[in-house]
Amino acid sequence: MLQEKLEKILEENCLTMPEITEDIPHGDMPGDKVEIGEDHIKKANVIIKALIPMMAKQAKEENKEKFVLTVCGGSGVGKSEIASLLSYYFNENGIGSYTMSGDNYPVRIPMYNDAERLRIFRYCGQQQMLADGVYSEENFKVLHEFMKNGDDANKNHIADYPWMESYIKGGRKGLEGYLGTTNETNFAEVEGILTKFKAGDEKIFLKRMGREDTELWYSEVDFSDIQVLIIEWTHGNNDSFKGVDIPVLLNSTPEETLAHRKARNRDGATDSPFTTMVLEIEQELLKSQAHKAKIIISKSGELWDFEEFKAHMGE
Image 1 (spheres, one colour):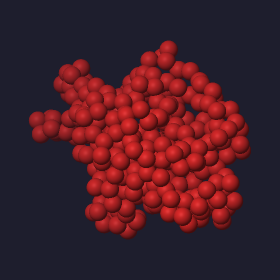
Image 2 (cartoon, one colour):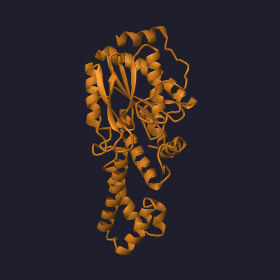
Image 3 (cartoon, helix red, strand yellow):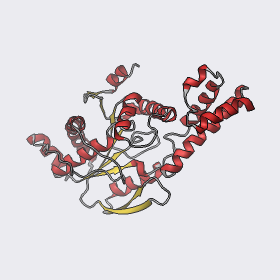
Image 4 (cartoon, one colour):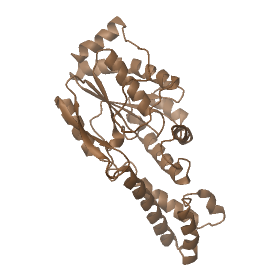
């Protein structure tokens, strides 16, 4: 039983912390670049030691044999690496674990989702200009040049063109109504997987995807010996997502996540004003939902409760 395994680890103080090699299993996002460093190992070690007693308590009180954990945080903060490490630790301690990427479950494949984000920003920006009475053919000609250069979310333009404030404000509001919602992310499909996992299904088809429209398929995964499902996902603590037992939040600022993304070179134009705006909105979502996280770990690897989180985030 899972409860017995967890209690044995606690009672005998025998949590195995194995050596980390380059070939440990990673998550299931095709093409994801996972590079585990000392910082990731430090955080994973802190998290696993906090998880074991928390899981043992839940297992006893709720008679749990299956756990769903999420590792969430800003883009590029180390979710893939830390989730992979946690799964590795569980498996090495006799508790079967699988790492799943939530990024496989958008409503649209990435190339179309990126386009939809930009479409919403530009449409809502121009709608705001119309509402504020600052739209004109002359202004659009200027705006169109910014669009062609991928620079129309740049706040610096407001100094020379005050009407750009209206455009950027409207575009951002439109994005806030899309990012991390059911319009962008198929939370229901992920919840269906959690339901099957907790019901004891031994074989479950999981989605795989790349960035192109031909790169979408399903792979059957054997869950017969899996007791812990770890989902690494920005939206793992989202208000629209149900069925998670323990959400783990990796805290960071938008500036820190942008630096991580640049280092990983995950997408093109990571330093664009538009991408920066997306990261800021994601950060606001994470901050607003942080009260639900059972474990919060700081950038430096310290465990925080929610009050400490608020204090460090300036609330």
